[in-house]
Length: 148
Image (cartoon, rainbow, N blue to C red; front, side, top):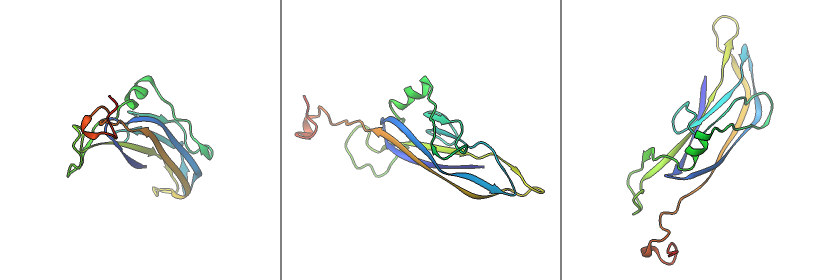
C-alpha cells in the first residue's frame, strides 16, 4: 500500500533537510503491517533526494539516510512543473520543483484475502529549503536586489 505527500518548491531551491516524524505508530487489525519506509524524490516512489529505512518501529523523529548523489541532487531542485500563467519576469519564472514523499506500507492479509484495517498511525513531513534569488545583481530591481 502506498501513501504520500507532495511539496512544491521554487525551481533550483537548495534543500537543507527533511523532517519526518512518526507521531503515532501504525497499527492494524485483521493482518500485519510490515516495516514502513519512505522514499523522497521528485516523482512518486523515487529516492532522488533521500530515503527513510524504517518509520513505524517507534514514535519520534526518523533518520533520513543520504547518499552523495542525493546530497548533490538537493543542491538545486529540478524544474518539474510549469505554472501558468507566469507571474514573474525571471528566466525561471513559472517553474516549480516537486518533492514527493512516498510511504510504502507492506502488509500481510489476515483471514482470507481481506486487507488489514489500519486503526492508528500518523506522520508529519517537512522540507526545509533555501530559495535562490535570481534578482541579485539585477539593476532593474534596485534597491532590493542590486548587490553589485
